[in-house]
Length: 160
Image (tube, rainbow, N blue to C red):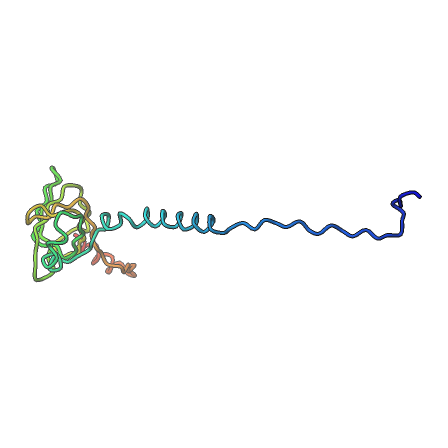
C-alpha cells in the first residue's frame, strides 16, 4: 500500500500561532522617569540662584538678610537726580514714600527718566548704595493723539 498523497481526504490542521514573548514595560518606564527627572533637574535645579526679586525699598529693608549679595530689582519713584552727560554717571534716590536708597548707574538715560517718575532698577547692593546695571523707566500706558493745534502746542510745552 502506498502512503496517502496530498490529495488524500484527510484535512490538514493549521499550526497553532507562535507565542509572542511578552516584554517587560519596566525599562521603558524607567527610561521615561529618568528623562523627566533629568529635565526637571536642569530646568529647576538652579532656578533659585537665577531668580531676581522685584521689591520696593521697604520690602528690601525687611528682607535685607535674604537678598544681600543677590541680583535684585527695586522699584519706586525717582528723587534727587544728578546726571553727568559727559561721563554718563547717574545718581538718584529711589523711594517708595517711607524708605529711600541711593542708586548709582552708568549709561545713557532715556528722556522719560525724570524726577517723580516710576523706575525699576536691576543690580546689587554694595553697602547701602544700589549699583544698577539696568534702568527701566515706567511711563504712561495711554497715548492720546492731539485733536487740535492747541492740544499739540500744549503737549509740546509740557514735554519741555
